[in-house]
Length: 372
Image 1: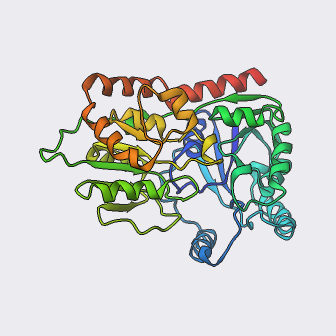
Image 2: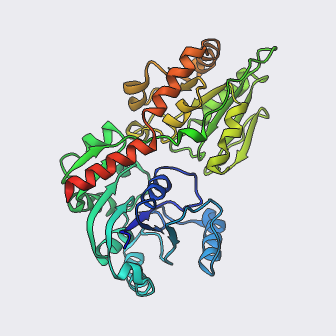
Protein backbone atom coordinates (compact mmCIF):
# COMPACT_ATOMS: atom_id res chain seq x y z
CA UNK A 1 0.00 0.00 0.00
CA UNK A 2 1.30 3.45 -0.92
CA UNK A 3 1.89 5.76 2.07
CA UNK A 4 -0.52 8.69 2.39
CA UNK A 5 0.49 12.30 2.96
CA UNK A 6 -1.88 15.11 3.90
CA UNK A 7 -0.92 18.58 2.70
CA UNK A 8 -2.75 21.36 4.56
CA UNK A 9 -2.43 24.51 2.48
CA UNK A 10 -3.50 28.10 2.97
CA UNK A 11 -3.36 28.46 -0.83
CA UNK A 12 -5.68 27.02 -3.44
CA UNK A 13 -4.17 24.55 -5.88
CA UNK A 14 -5.21 26.90 -8.71
CA UNK A 15 -3.41 29.90 -7.19
CA UNK A 16 0.06 31.01 -8.27
CA UNK A 17 2.17 27.85 -8.42
CA UNK A 18 4.74 27.67 -5.65
CA UNK A 19 6.27 25.50 -2.94
CA UNK A 20 2.98 23.99 -1.74
CA UNK A 21 1.95 22.49 -5.09
CA UNK A 22 5.50 21.54 -6.09
CA UNK A 23 6.24 19.49 -3.00
CA UNK A 24 2.80 17.88 -3.10
CA UNK A 25 3.47 16.82 -6.69
CA UNK A 26 6.84 15.35 -5.73
CA UNK A 27 5.41 13.49 -2.73
CA UNK A 28 2.79 11.99 -5.07
CA UNK A 29 5.51 10.07 -6.91
CA UNK A 30 6.10 7.99 -3.78
CA UNK A 31 2.61 7.83 -2.27
CA UNK A 32 -0.93 9.17 -2.27
CA UNK A 33 -1.35 12.88 -1.53
CA UNK A 34 -4.47 14.58 -0.22
CA UNK A 35 -4.12 18.33 -0.79
CA UNK A 36 -6.50 20.13 1.57
CA UNK A 37 -7.27 23.77 0.84
CA UNK A 38 -8.22 25.83 3.89
CA UNK A 39 -9.09 29.55 3.90
CA UNK A 40 -6.48 31.93 5.22
CA UNK A 41 -6.67 34.20 8.22
CA UNK A 42 -7.35 37.57 6.61
CA UNK A 43 -10.52 39.27 7.78
CA UNK A 44 -13.32 39.10 5.24
CA UNK A 45 -14.86 42.31 3.85
CA UNK A 46 -17.11 43.44 1.03
CA UNK A 47 -14.12 43.47 -1.34
CA UNK A 48 -13.97 39.69 -0.91
CA UNK A 49 -17.53 39.03 -2.11
CA UNK A 50 -16.49 37.84 -5.57
CA UNK A 51 -13.80 35.56 -4.15
CA UNK A 52 -16.25 34.06 -1.64
CA UNK A 53 -18.84 33.42 -4.36
CA UNK A 54 -16.22 31.67 -6.49
CA UNK A 55 -15.24 29.44 -3.59
CA UNK A 56 -18.88 28.61 -2.83
CA UNK A 57 -19.37 27.69 -6.48
CA UNK A 58 -16.40 25.34 -6.28
CA UNK A 59 -17.68 23.79 -3.06
CA UNK A 60 -21.19 23.33 -4.42
CA UNK A 61 -20.16 20.55 -6.77
CA UNK A 62 -17.23 18.71 -8.31
CA UNK A 63 -15.15 20.88 -10.60
CA UNK A 64 -11.79 20.16 -12.15
CA UNK A 65 -9.03 22.53 -10.95
CA UNK A 66 -7.69 24.83 -13.65
CA UNK A 67 -4.08 23.94 -12.82
CA UNK A 68 -2.99 20.41 -13.78
CA UNK A 69 -3.21 17.87 -10.97
CA UNK A 70 -0.63 15.07 -11.21
CA UNK A 71 -1.47 11.42 -10.67
CA UNK A 72 -1.54 10.59 -6.98
CA UNK A 73 -2.82 14.00 -5.85
CA UNK A 74 -6.42 14.53 -4.77
CA UNK A 75 -7.76 18.00 -3.94
CA UNK A 76 -10.22 18.43 -1.06
CA UNK A 77 -11.91 21.66 -0.02
CA UNK A 78 -13.69 21.54 3.33
CA UNK A 79 -16.46 24.08 3.78
CA UNK A 80 -15.07 26.15 6.68
CA UNK A 81 -14.86 29.83 7.56
CA UNK A 82 -11.64 31.86 7.70
CA UNK A 83 -10.05 31.38 11.13
CA UNK A 84 -10.44 34.98 12.22
CA UNK A 85 -12.52 34.98 15.41
CA UNK A 86 -13.72 32.70 18.26
CA UNK A 87 -17.16 32.17 16.68
CA UNK A 88 -15.67 30.92 13.41
CA UNK A 89 -13.19 28.76 15.35
CA UNK A 90 -16.03 27.02 17.18
CA UNK A 91 -18.14 26.54 14.05
CA UNK A 92 -15.15 25.24 12.10
CA UNK A 93 -14.46 22.50 14.63
CA UNK A 94 -17.91 21.05 13.95
CA UNK A 95 -17.62 21.52 10.19
CA UNK A 96 -14.25 19.76 10.11
CA UNK A 97 -15.58 16.82 12.13
CA UNK A 98 -18.42 16.46 9.63
CA UNK A 99 -15.99 16.72 6.71
CA UNK A 100 -13.62 14.09 8.12
CA UNK A 101 -16.50 11.63 8.44
CA UNK A 102 -16.84 11.81 4.64
CA UNK A 103 -13.12 11.16 4.07
CA UNK A 104 -12.26 7.54 4.93
CA UNK A 105 -8.67 8.02 3.75
CA UNK A 106 -8.15 10.68 6.41
CA UNK A 107 -10.15 8.80 9.03
CA UNK A 108 -7.70 5.90 8.59
CA UNK A 109 -4.76 8.22 9.31
CA UNK A 110 -1.79 9.26 7.20
CA UNK A 111 1.94 8.71 7.27
CA UNK A 112 2.91 12.39 7.14
CA UNK A 113 1.16 15.75 7.44
CA UNK A 114 2.83 18.66 5.66
CA UNK A 115 1.23 21.82 6.99
CA UNK A 116 1.56 25.41 5.76
CA UNK A 117 -0.90 27.19 8.02
CA UNK A 118 -0.98 28.31 11.65
CA UNK A 119 -4.75 28.94 11.44
CA UNK A 120 -6.97 27.32 14.06
CA UNK A 121 -8.71 25.26 11.36
CA UNK A 122 -5.35 23.77 10.33
CA UNK A 123 -4.46 22.97 13.94
CA UNK A 124 -7.88 21.35 14.43
CA UNK A 125 -7.31 19.14 11.38
CA UNK A 126 -3.85 18.14 12.62
CA UNK A 127 -5.37 17.17 15.96
CA UNK A 128 -8.15 15.17 14.25
CA UNK A 129 -6.12 13.18 11.68
CA UNK A 130 -3.85 10.44 13.02
CA UNK A 131 -0.31 10.75 11.64
CA UNK A 132 3.21 9.45 12.22
CA UNK A 133 5.09 12.64 11.43
CA UNK A 134 4.21 16.33 11.23
CA UNK A 135 6.17 18.78 9.07
CA UNK A 136 5.49 22.51 9.43
CA UNK A 137 6.70 24.09 6.20
CA UNK A 138 6.82 27.69 7.40
CA UNK A 139 7.11 30.10 4.46
CA UNK A 140 5.79 33.32 6.05
CA UNK A 141 6.57 35.58 8.99
CA UNK A 142 3.02 35.64 10.30
CA UNK A 143 3.85 38.15 13.03
CA UNK A 144 4.56 40.75 10.32
CA UNK A 145 1.27 40.25 8.45
CA UNK A 146 -1.25 43.02 9.09
CA UNK A 147 -4.67 42.07 10.40
CA UNK A 148 -3.96 38.54 11.61
CA UNK A 149 -6.00 37.23 14.58
CA UNK A 150 -4.36 37.80 17.96
CA UNK A 151 -4.30 34.05 18.59
CA UNK A 152 -2.24 33.22 15.52
CA UNK A 153 1.24 33.94 16.90
CA UNK A 154 0.77 31.85 20.09
CA UNK A 155 -0.94 29.18 18.00
CA UNK A 156 2.10 29.06 15.74
CA UNK A 157 4.35 28.55 18.76
CA UNK A 158 2.23 25.57 19.71
CA UNK A 159 2.59 24.25 16.17
CA UNK A 160 6.37 24.73 16.22
CA UNK A 161 6.60 22.76 19.47
CA UNK A 162 4.31 20.03 18.09
CA UNK A 163 5.93 19.55 14.68
CA UNK A 164 8.56 16.83 14.33
CA UNK A 165 10.30 19.03 11.77
CA UNK A 166 9.95 22.69 10.80
CA UNK A 167 11.25 23.76 7.40
CA UNK A 168 11.95 27.41 6.56
CA UNK A 169 13.27 28.95 3.33
CA UNK A 170 15.20 31.87 4.88
CA UNK A 171 17.73 32.63 7.59
CA UNK A 172 15.46 35.23 9.18
CA UNK A 173 12.66 32.69 9.67
CA UNK A 174 15.19 30.22 11.04
CA UNK A 175 16.38 32.80 13.58
CA UNK A 176 12.82 33.79 14.44
CA UNK A 177 11.65 30.25 15.21
CA UNK A 178 14.78 28.45 16.38
CA UNK A 179 13.92 28.78 20.06
CA UNK A 180 10.35 27.48 19.72
CA UNK A 181 10.76 24.68 17.16
CA UNK A 182 11.56 21.09 18.16
CA UNK A 183 13.77 20.77 15.10
CA UNK A 184 14.24 23.41 12.42
CA UNK A 185 16.04 23.13 9.08
CA UNK A 186 16.53 25.80 6.43
CA UNK A 187 15.36 24.49 3.06
CA UNK A 188 15.40 27.26 0.41
CA UNK A 189 12.94 27.18 -2.45
CA UNK A 190 14.07 25.33 -5.56
CA UNK A 191 13.28 25.50 -9.25
CA UNK A 192 11.56 23.34 -11.83
CA UNK A 193 14.44 24.24 -14.10
CA UNK A 194 13.14 22.68 -17.30
CA UNK A 195 10.11 25.01 -17.27
CA UNK A 196 12.29 28.11 -17.48
CA UNK A 197 15.07 27.28 -19.92
CA UNK A 198 14.80 29.70 -22.85
CA UNK A 199 17.20 30.72 -25.62
CA UNK A 200 19.01 34.07 -25.30
CA UNK A 201 17.06 37.06 -26.60
CA UNK A 202 18.75 39.37 -29.14
CA UNK A 203 18.83 43.01 -28.11
CA UNK A 204 16.43 45.36 -29.85
CA UNK A 205 18.12 47.65 -32.36
CA UNK A 206 16.50 50.75 -30.81
CA UNK A 207 17.68 49.87 -27.29
CA UNK A 208 14.18 49.33 -25.93
CA UNK A 209 13.73 46.70 -23.24
CA UNK A 210 10.97 44.39 -22.04
CA UNK A 211 10.95 43.80 -18.29
CA UNK A 212 9.10 41.02 -16.49
CA UNK A 213 7.81 40.40 -12.99
CA UNK A 214 5.64 37.36 -12.33
CA UNK A 215 3.79 36.49 -9.14
CA UNK A 216 0.77 37.88 -7.37
CA UNK A 217 0.58 41.65 -7.21
CA UNK A 218 0.14 42.58 -3.55
CA UNK A 219 1.17 45.83 -1.87
CA UNK A 220 2.36 43.89 1.19
CA UNK A 221 5.44 42.70 -0.67
CA UNK A 222 5.62 44.43 -4.07
CA UNK A 223 6.90 48.00 -4.51
CA UNK A 224 4.32 49.44 -6.90
CA UNK A 225 5.93 52.90 -6.73
CA UNK A 226 9.23 51.45 -7.95
CA UNK A 227 7.53 49.82 -10.95
CA UNK A 228 5.78 53.08 -11.76
CA UNK A 229 9.08 54.98 -11.51
CA UNK A 230 10.63 52.70 -14.13
CA UNK A 231 7.62 52.97 -16.44
CA UNK A 232 7.53 56.78 -16.33
CA UNK A 233 11.30 57.20 -16.65
CA UNK A 234 11.43 54.95 -19.76
CA UNK A 235 8.09 55.15 -21.61
CA UNK A 236 9.65 53.25 -24.54
CA UNK A 237 10.22 50.22 -22.34
CA UNK A 238 7.56 47.59 -21.82
CA UNK A 239 6.88 46.12 -18.37
CA UNK A 240 5.01 42.82 -18.12
CA UNK A 241 3.34 42.03 -14.78
CA UNK A 242 2.11 38.44 -14.84
CA UNK A 243 -0.08 37.23 -12.00
CA UNK A 244 -3.33 37.87 -10.14
CA UNK A 245 -3.88 41.45 -8.95
CA UNK A 246 -4.47 41.37 -5.19
CA UNK A 247 -3.99 45.14 -4.75
CA UNK A 248 -5.33 47.31 -7.62
CA UNK A 249 -3.04 50.07 -8.89
CA UNK A 250 -3.24 52.50 -11.82
CA UNK A 251 -0.02 51.91 -13.79
CA UNK A 252 1.22 53.92 -16.82
CA UNK A 253 0.21 52.60 -20.27
CA UNK A 254 3.54 50.85 -20.92
CA UNK A 255 2.79 48.45 -18.05
CA UNK A 256 0.86 45.36 -19.18
CA UNK A 257 -1.14 43.33 -16.67
CA UNK A 258 -1.29 39.83 -18.12
CA UNK A 259 -3.23 38.22 -15.26
CA UNK A 260 -2.57 34.83 -13.73
CA UNK A 261 -0.99 32.32 -16.10
CA UNK A 262 -0.30 28.59 -15.80
CA UNK A 263 3.11 27.94 -14.29
CA UNK A 264 4.14 25.83 -17.26
CA UNK A 265 3.17 28.75 -19.54
CA UNK A 266 5.50 31.31 -17.93
CA UNK A 267 8.27 30.38 -20.37
CA UNK A 268 6.39 32.28 -23.09
CA UNK A 269 6.58 35.51 -21.07
CA UNK A 270 10.19 34.91 -20.05
CA UNK A 271 11.16 34.49 -23.70
CA UNK A 272 9.85 38.01 -24.41
CA UNK A 273 11.78 39.61 -21.52
CA UNK A 274 15.23 41.18 -21.58
CA UNK A 275 15.50 41.63 -17.81
CA UNK A 276 13.60 40.04 -14.90
CA UNK A 277 12.52 42.17 -11.95
CA UNK A 278 12.20 41.32 -8.27
CA UNK A 279 10.95 44.75 -7.13
CA UNK A 280 10.01 43.89 -3.56
CA UNK A 281 9.12 46.39 -0.89
CA UNK A 282 11.45 46.42 2.10
CA UNK A 283 9.45 45.87 5.30
CA UNK A 284 9.22 43.53 8.28
CA UNK A 285 7.43 40.92 6.20
CA UNK A 286 9.77 40.85 3.19
CA UNK A 287 12.92 40.86 5.32
CA UNK A 288 12.04 37.24 6.12
CA UNK A 289 11.39 36.34 2.49
CA UNK A 290 13.41 34.37 0.00
CA UNK A 291 11.28 34.89 -3.14
CA UNK A 292 9.92 31.54 -4.29
CA UNK A 293 10.82 32.41 -7.87
CA UNK A 294 14.51 33.19 -7.23
CA UNK A 295 16.02 30.01 -8.69
CA UNK A 296 13.39 29.97 -11.44
CA UNK A 297 14.57 33.42 -12.53
CA UNK A 298 18.16 32.22 -12.49
CA UNK A 299 17.17 29.19 -14.60
CA UNK A 300 16.07 31.52 -17.41
CA UNK A 301 19.62 32.85 -17.76
CA UNK A 302 18.16 36.35 -18.02
CA UNK A 303 19.74 39.19 -16.01
CA UNK A 304 17.88 39.99 -12.77
CA UNK A 305 17.44 43.31 -10.98
CA UNK A 306 16.06 43.27 -7.44
CA UNK A 307 15.62 45.34 -4.34
CA UNK A 308 18.12 44.23 -1.66
CA UNK A 309 16.15 41.73 0.37
CA UNK A 310 18.57 40.37 3.01
CA UNK A 311 18.31 36.77 1.80
CA UNK A 312 19.02 37.76 -1.81
CA UNK A 313 22.00 39.91 -0.85
CA UNK A 314 23.42 37.13 1.32
CA UNK A 315 23.39 34.44 -1.37
CA UNK A 316 23.09 36.07 -4.80
CA UNK A 317 25.29 39.16 -4.76
CA UNK A 318 27.32 37.81 -7.68
CA UNK A 319 24.31 36.95 -9.86
CA UNK A 320 21.73 39.70 -9.17
CA UNK A 321 22.07 43.46 -9.55
CA UNK A 322 20.50 45.35 -6.64
CA UNK A 323 18.84 48.76 -6.47
CA UNK A 324 17.95 50.05 -3.03
CA UNK A 325 15.95 53.10 -4.14
CA UNK A 326 13.44 53.58 -6.97
CA UNK A 327 15.69 56.08 -8.74
CA UNK A 328 18.48 53.46 -8.87
CA UNK A 329 16.36 50.94 -10.76
CA UNK A 330 16.66 52.32 -14.31
CA UNK A 331 20.50 52.55 -14.19
CA UNK A 332 20.61 49.07 -12.64
CA UNK A 333 18.42 47.64 -15.41
CA UNK A 334 20.53 49.28 -18.13
CA UNK A 335 23.68 47.94 -16.47
CA UNK A 336 22.21 44.44 -16.20
CA UNK A 337 21.17 44.44 -19.86
CA UNK A 338 24.55 45.63 -21.11
CA UNK A 339 26.36 42.99 -19.01
CA UNK A 340 24.21 40.11 -20.26
CA UNK A 341 27.03 37.95 -21.59
CA UNK A 342 27.05 34.23 -22.36
CA UNK A 343 29.23 33.22 -19.41
CA UNK A 344 27.04 35.17 -16.97
CA UNK A 345 23.92 33.50 -18.38
CA UNK A 346 25.46 30.06 -17.96
CA UNK A 347 26.48 30.76 -14.36
CA UNK A 348 22.90 31.64 -13.50
CA UNK A 349 21.55 28.49 -15.17
CA UNK A 350 24.16 26.30 -13.47
CA UNK A 351 23.24 27.75 -10.07
CA UNK A 352 19.56 27.01 -10.68
CA UNK A 353 20.28 23.45 -11.78
CA UNK A 354 22.28 22.87 -8.59
CA UNK A 355 19.23 24.01 -6.60
CA UNK A 356 16.42 22.17 -8.37
CA UNK A 357 13.25 21.02 -6.65
CA UNK A 358 14.45 17.47 -7.26
CA UNK A 359 17.42 18.10 -4.96
CA UNK A 360 15.18 19.79 -2.39
CA UNK A 361 12.81 16.83 -2.38
CA UNK A 362 15.68 14.41 -1.84
CA UNK A 363 16.69 16.48 1.18
CA UNK A 364 13.15 16.35 2.59
CA UNK A 365 13.14 12.58 2.23
CA UNK A 366 16.49 12.37 4.01
CA UNK A 367 15.16 14.48 6.87
CA UNK A 368 12.04 12.33 7.16
CA UNK A 369 14.11 9.15 7.20
CA UNK A 370 16.23 10.59 9.99
CA UNK A 371 13.09 11.09 12.09
CA UNK A 372 12.04 7.43 11.80
